[in-house]
Image (cartoon, rainbow, N blue to C red; front, side, top):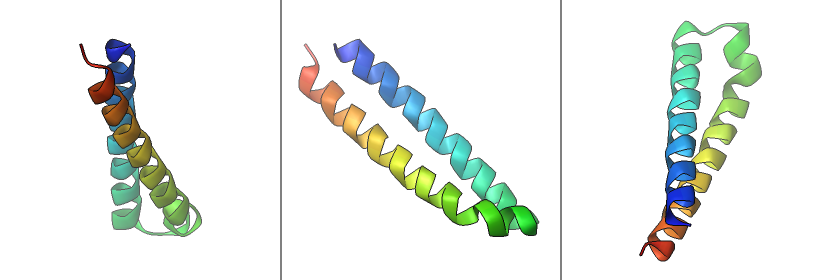
Length: 64
């Protein structure tokens, strides 16, 4: 079970980094895309960070 939670943690961390990169790029570029999706990207990043922390805790609790 540890390996499943560890893998999910890594996947969610990559997703956080991706959403963060897209958000930073859109903020630097500005324009309509940032106005439309900036807040949604930030919410998605926060939710993905929460998932990463949850999977980290589950992996920690199930380690052999």
